[in-house]
Image 1 (cartoon, helix red, strand yellow):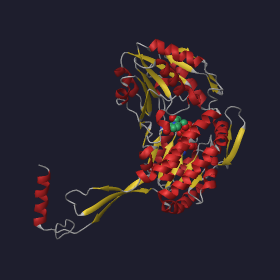
Image 2 (tube, rainbow, N blue to C red):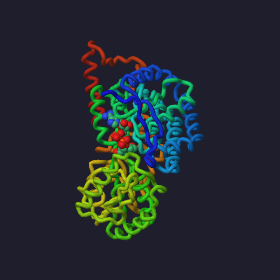
Image 3 (cartoon, rainbow, N blue to C red):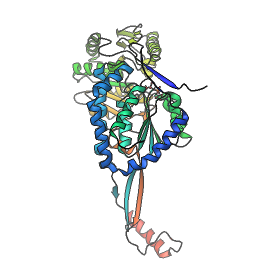
Image 4 (tube, rainbow, N blue to C red):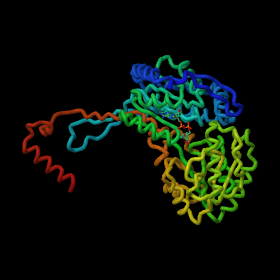
Length: 484
Ligand code: NAD
């Protein structure tokens, strides 16, 4: 079947067309990778200081045009433009941080050679990989891919970004804005298109793929990358829990958990989907959060669902919970009202139900009362996902956090790690592997090169067929001495 020449993005709120963009073919992808690969040497040669100047001017441009970009994000995703502006602001902060700190975290690291190799000098270099392919989702079309794009560029790589087919306009805008500030050509390409375009990127000669999207697509991409042993960074889905202890600030917990669950219509990879609350405060917590949820105004506090095909999935999760005995404290079995989903909070939802076990990606929440924090930790960890969590406790927050099998935890807050550029971002289990953001995020887009150089020659030459028995005996005596 021939690939369509164009993809069209529509407003989820009105159904109107927002824009048309090329559906980049396999041949186009190969051509872009070749051009980026050739240009990457110049970008690398600029060094940290040279790249910092350009990336900072891009950050400046984005900040100056935040309203324009927010309007486009809002048009393509359906989210309120204030939420779009918040997402862009955090994305710019990451870009700025990566530009400023790449030199510090990717500079040569000098090591001690050890007693056996005392005549050597030893250091590790963090070399750019070359060309990084970034495949992004639609839910945070600026913030999320920026976690890979900014850090990969700052580390000295050229980047080819394949935005989601639901937000091609945002991707295109980012590419154009970079070209306005960067005097170098071919360093940052945006290849709009659908899954086939993404698939072509995974099979191309890129040196790494940074993928953000669903775990199901992540598995296909990991398999495709395995063909060429192309390294891949996986930022996938989750069913993030909030754990609420009896000594928490209950009002603050309810307010933040509600926002963590329902902001962006629940279309947040690190959004909260399940609550485990201590039985001593469970009734009060459920009443408080339900009261707050009933005040939400759909269409104002959050918008239409971006992807129409997510609506039947949310509906199926709600109906499955009802079949298994769930009760509604907010919303109903008819909460899905295209293009919106009404706030929905359920109790008595079994752990094996779709709503608890799978990513719902809608403004829904399940609440379960637990006898102890041990039980809450056990249930939180029982998931096949392990992206992030939120813990609410005045005394034990950090201790509970350390027991959780996930990549990020906010204590007495929600989603706090997203806006903290120094902190690595990523998950475990089926939520993925590798890290964006922070020093780890910079190193994700570099490879280590160990350089061991002779400082002076010694009579103890190991690397020769003429090695004497005396040298062998000396090594044995030395290693015994060192390991007494
Ligand atoms: P998706 O998996 O449907 O698509 C993501 C991207 O992959 C899109 O650009 C798509 O075109 C591309 N793609 C699809 N099939 C492909 C293939 N075979 N080869 C290459 N590329 C392919 O995800 P989505 O619906 O856009 O995003 C929502 C998902 O993303 C949710 O599961 C959410 O949890 C996850 N997400 C994770 C993070 C994180 O950082 N962990 C952040 C945001 C979103």
